[in-house]
Length: 277
View (cartoon, rainbow, N blue to C red):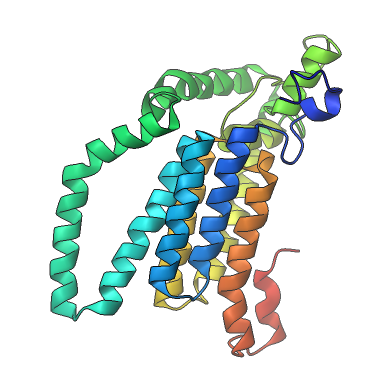
């Protein structure tokens, strides 16, 4: 709407909240769902809250958001069964739940796709994003060696550079990788190159592993669910262009870790090293 109204490039650069009104609603709902999952509140209240988030995502047309919040809802249903039943009862509940989920998975998938109204997510990945990944990797290796190893610089593979390239008619060859890469892995690879991307992801995974080591069993499961949602998002959109969702991820991790800081779980000041510099 901002772009069609003829606003200046400020809006076209897809700054916070401007990259798509419908998509923004869906990712905000996903962020709220992730934060809600992190809190220790009544599971039944949380289930109602997640269903509301799911309905908001349905209005947005965001397929990623619908699938992500569905994962949260499934997890909470399992948590409710675990807390309400004996071990034997929960195992029976788990088997029945898994069978019902497996039997209905195709119908649920079709329902989510129709609710979003934007086509099949898997077909979109195969037809569009997979082709884009192969194209981008080929272009990365066709570039000069220094670019292949260390990337084309910040902004490569983003909406901002793509639109800027069209607006000011940048001559081809003066910038690299000015097309939109609609996921997270490609922009990092194109911006930092093979060496930089390896350093980035290695550090990121080690940091997450350090956080995981401080969590109890319940919070570890919540943490893994958040990581699954994050991984799904990395395949379906550019994480670094969805600022509000970035804040929600950070807030949810702060909630999980903060519980153990308050309880004195970090005995020494050295334990604060898990926090990024």
